[in-house]
Amino acid sequence: MSVNFKPLADRVLVEPTAAETKTASGIIIPDSAKEKPQEGIVVAVGPGKVDEPTTVKVGDKVLYGKYSGTELKIGGTDYLIVKEADLLGVLS
Image (cartoon, rainbow, N blue to C red; front, side):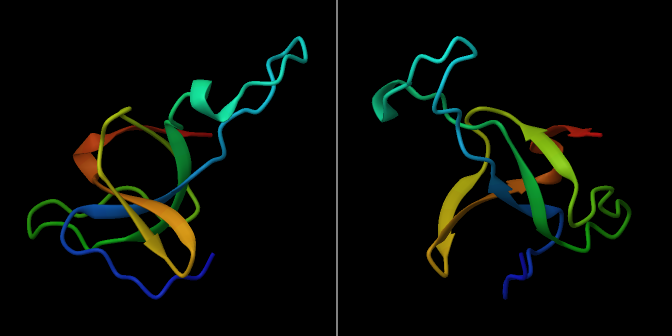
């Protein structure tokens, strides 16, 4: 998960987890009906603001808002860059 990208200020680079392809009962979900992922793994973290350092760290599994951040592609992999304030929480 090493990426040559350093977010600025309070931004966090997240690699979204893949959307489910099957329901619990085994029904296959087509691409057009899949929900946009709302959780992912933190890949890179900015230093934070002067009076507010970032609280998440690389490797944390986080939840974020459905329409949060900006999607980008680095080295063929899809990522999401979000402000730390847009993160809803860290999953343990």
